Length: 303
Image 1 (tube, rainbow, N blue to C red):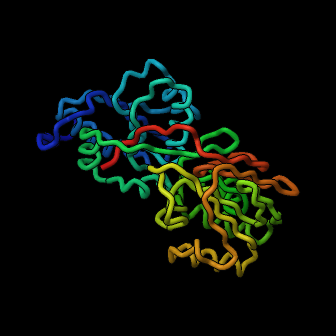
Image 2: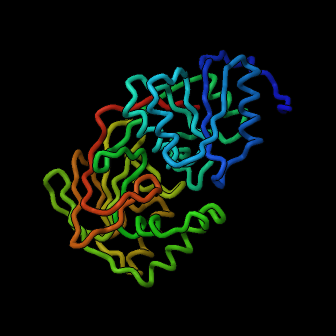
């Protein structure tokens, strides 16, 4: 039996057809929370269905379906799940608006958009259906809504076991970073940024302000405005990495020594040997890496 929930009479419902998509095997999956959201929506006379994925790539396939007759596709998951939806939208001439129900490991996009976490607040925002443009970048033609990076952080993303990630969440990345940090062989990368050449050991192309959660990487960036920024860290030895980490926690990494942050239109990352790449917290092969903003964005539901 569905839990009883208050009717949402103070909100004039604008979203009438909603599909919530969730991965039942993910660590953040909470069926009771989703049921509460669905009950709130149904009490407001909104048609809502729940689709539980059973295999990788299913979110992308759903989002690409041209027969998807919805007002809102709500992704209950993390940044990687949102990335899947955007990838599918690229093959859909009339995609629905996107909503995000934070339920992943990092949920950086939730920080970017200031999304609520309580079921009632989530339901209210979906019903109100207030949207903003969601811009994104392309890494070798593949969309990224938050970031694409090459270097140590990408090596950690490649190296963290999925079972450990589901069990320990963010701590799994810390443990993997410690394991890799003492044995890795870093590579000097060359970054061609709009005709200017930079060199460094870590390269991060960011579409938003935050990195790894609530840590400010680039205060001038926003996922709801056009434009990408690139961060290049010149050295990644233990002292430089510690200095970078402290500056990140203090929100001053863009002013840290040995760090360059700049806006760009096109960038290309090359290395002497292949360097691991990640996009939105998921592995994405190795360098070379071509980066640019996407020509168009999509609409995302905001509070």
